[in-house]
Amino acid sequence: MSPASAQSNKLEASKASQKIILGGKEFELNTYTIDGKTYIKLRDFAKFLSTTSKKFSLSYDKDQKLPVIKTMDDYEYENLEDN
Image (cartoon, rainbow, N blue to C red; front, side, top):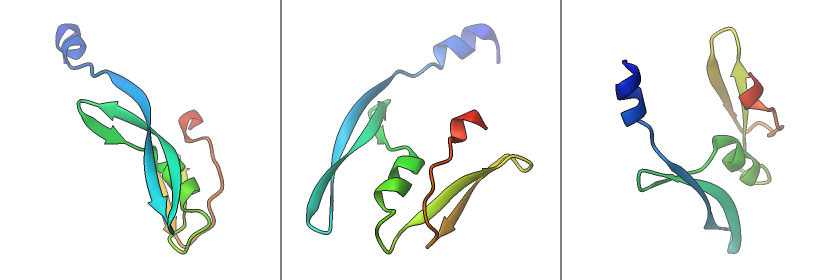
């Protein structure tokens, strides 16, 4: 990709929050709006669900360069941005 086309493909992200209802309780999660769509970081969602029956863990396999998701596993924060 040429530098000119790389610059034209840049998207702006704006930080916001989204209300989510779980078990009748209302929570707010940090979100990001990119090109009119709302995104939630997967690790934030894992933390949000960590006390429920839908919990999952999230890690990163450096050798395979892939995220690893394990359902019904306790969530532990791992700084994936440093990997």
